[in-house]
Length: 119
Image 1: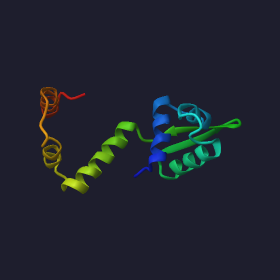
Image 2: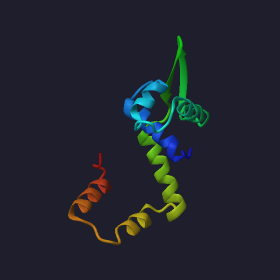
Image 3: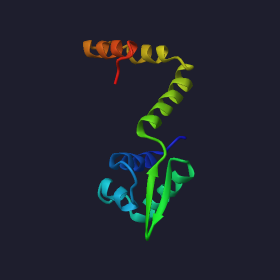
Image 4: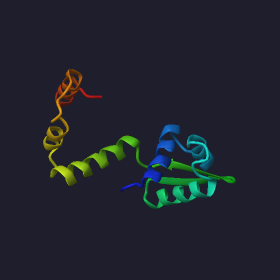
């Protein structure tokens, strides 16, 4: 489920708020004057079509709830990146990213990850 840059900004606003949000909640979390209400509503509808959101109308207000967490989306995108650019090999990706050298902190973090202690 690939998101455009604008769709991702909308989802970030929703994830930051947590739980069900209104279109006004989304607008309030975006940089001022980035988009107007009709544009945000269009993006929310697209995100519903993509299965990223569900909506429920309560009275006159529609609430949008994410179906996918930010972590789940990031994991999915990372897997696509690894598959497409590195033939599914995380090792090749890490080797490519570390050719410039690793700091001691990088090495500690990688060691924790490999030992299953990463959080």
